[in-house]
Amino acid sequence: MNKSLFTAATIVFVFANTGSAADITYNVDQTIGAGSVIGFIDTDGTLGTLGSGDIADWNLEVSDGSTSFDLLGPFEAGWNSSVSTNGSNLSATALQLTFDFSADDFGYLLFQDLNQGGQFYCAQDGSLLCYNPCPPAYGACPAGEGLNPINNDGPDQYNSIDTPTVIGTSSAAPEPTTLVLMIAGLGLSLMAKRKVPE
Image (tube, rainbow, N blue to C red; front, side):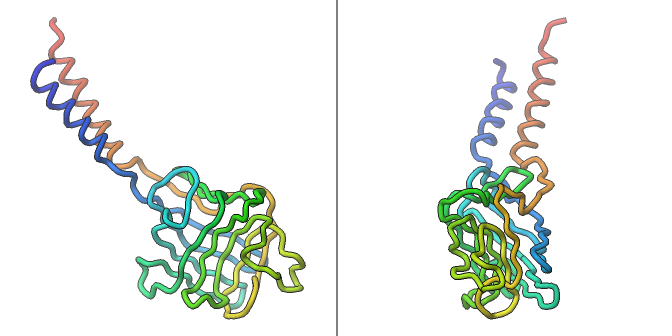
């Protein structure tokens, strides 16, 4: 291998081994009962099963149809909420954030105001950890999504769900590392082509 080709190959190797996954922003637009949760969830780029440590930021407006409350993450002005997870229900691909409501492993995803009042958005499996007991209007509160924009107990709006469901979508672009590798690979192929004897 000639010197310039070796140098280019070394650069590709270094970039490939020092690059890290880019954050992914998932847009959330869920109808829950007469209300909704709208906004975004940012992750650290982890794919597969996610925990609360993989969620970097969020801005979620929870509304019951007449009252709303913004749950803001640590990088938002007015940070006022926290996130917690349990189980292996939450998972991500480059394009989708999914919660498995059909599991039964005490799984939940909870965004809640820092004072642990009534303002929250929660997805839970059949373990009933988010709202237990559930207000009489919702019976036993089986697996599903709930929200409350006001400071009182239990979900103000609720959807019963018992299948894996997409709760956020992304239009992820190639990571910077991927782009560097593509450009470097093109450069290597052009250099190799120039060295082919005619």
